[in-house]
Length: 148
Image (cartoon, rainbow, N blue to C red):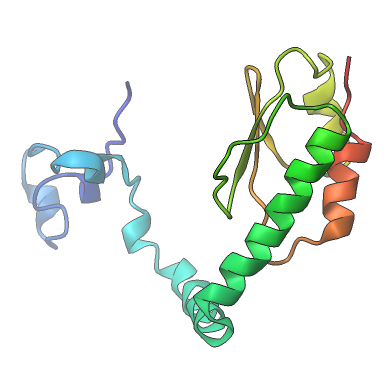
């Protein structure tokens, strides 16, 4: 596994004189994989606005919206026979559909061409609805999903 070589991933990498140190060890745990984004100050304005929006909306409202969209995803997947069964306790912010052999080999390129962004890995399709998604987006996903 390739570990990012960024200085922020190393012990003492936050110091201004880090460049004088001869490659110290990596930080413990997952911090070694951060790729340096902790110091990407260009993203701070968008992050601040996003956090203010979440605060204003309230986390319960966001969770309810995602739960609603996810329920629509699971309903549509069952209706179109994309999955065998949904989990007994789905989480509100992501749907991982076990598609088995139901997807056609061109499913990924077809979704991409339609502007639908999901992750296909093996027999699983990960769908992560966001607050800006709506029912039309879910219909677009399933209308463009290539099945066998």
